[in-house]
Amino acid sequence: MKSTPTILKKIPVLHDIKQRYPGIKGLFFDMDGTLFNTEPLHTKALLRIGEKYNITPPYPVDVVHELLVGKADHLLFEIIQAWPGMPQHWSVDDFVNEKNINVIELITKTPRSNYLPPEISLLIQNAYEEGFLLALVTSSEKIVTEKLLGISGLEKYFQIILTRDDCPKHKPDPWPYLRAIELSKLNSDEIIIFEDSSVGLDSATSSAQHVIKVEWY
Image (cartoon, rainbow, N blue to C red):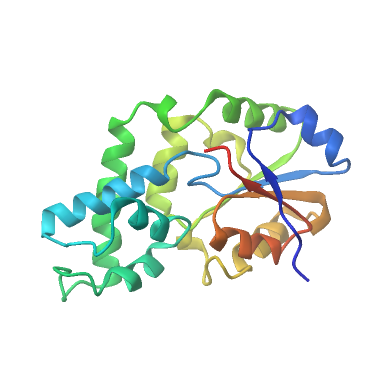
């Protein structure tokens, strides 16, 4: 049975989480749109690919952004294959490699404060120092995940990191979070999952009792 997510519009402090969820031992985070405000960079990367290869999205930019949010790149590739100008010889790996090149370039050139508010850094650091187990579960590839965590300085806080490359099944399937729970050796009611997209929430609510729908970006 799926759990019902709680909506949060403001990044919480650890004290408030501990008061509301006594007995919690682990905090599990999605990456893009939850830990980092990087969904706009993914949209920009896709639009840059479109400009480079004369691919014409059949929707306005805001609709393109909504299509992209929370989706693993192989699911996104299935959507854009039919767009006018899309190279017909491209495989999903061709597309993913091209998109990741652009995403990493944008991450490198974008000030960290644009996609990582200090409140998130403080929450992660405080949780780590108080002995919470921290896990990152993302549909992004390992190369992008490592780049983001390295630049942000948050990598050292996460005991468990699962990327698209580590999972045989991807969100909205519950497999990634179920695997993270298994690795954590915690019970599903001892963790909170933070997610922002419908795809991620489907995965999270099928895996754990406590799920927070992030609306702080």
